[in-house]
Image 1 (cartoon, rainbow, N blue to C red):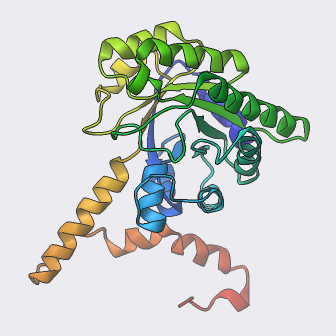
Image 2 (cartoon, rainbow, N blue to C red; image 1 turned 90 degrees about the vertical axis):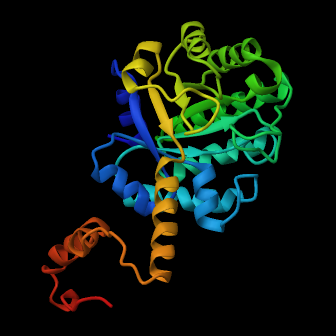
Length: 293
């Protein structure tokens, strides 16, 4: 089953999928190893990891697609890629969707922010006008249909950030039009209360995704509540990166004072990275049995 078909089957289930977000191949492997059904390549976290810079449109299309390809080659669970604003006009959006499909993504997110975009829970973000927003999703859906006609597949995750500038009603109106244009998953970013989250899910069709940033604008509710509200996916874009950064900073500070950190066992570390699997596979080939450096 293709990644896109697997994602469709997950979305058809009567549940809210907890989706920890990855930022590189290793973080994606850990998510898969812990039994999660899907993941999302967080633009915020990937930008921090790959170029050490904030998610303000600094990563190029090529860098983002390359990061996504590294992830899909490392795991079998569906990956949703962050296509940002599509990196230009509607024709760029088409190329973005095609590129993410070729990279093995199950879905790609296209949003209506002005470029360069900003994190959905940070100040200063703005959205394009309705016509341009709709053109982006129309172009994404057209690209999806061409990919299907050629034997491939990908889902379109349509995101609006209109809540920040224009209020919840405008955000819902935009998302409803995205659905009419053929988007597969809807994402109204940064509702501010549980009541707003319920309104979003009650008024919009199909699968909806929530974006839960610890300390962000949207309430961090238990998964049972997210399911009751009507979400199909609860994304956690920064949890793993924030945890990893916290652990690295603590370790670095402890090493300065000659304190030994509390680390993952070396044997487990090797197993999770893939050394044991490599050694087992290499036993078939005499010339490969030498332990790699």
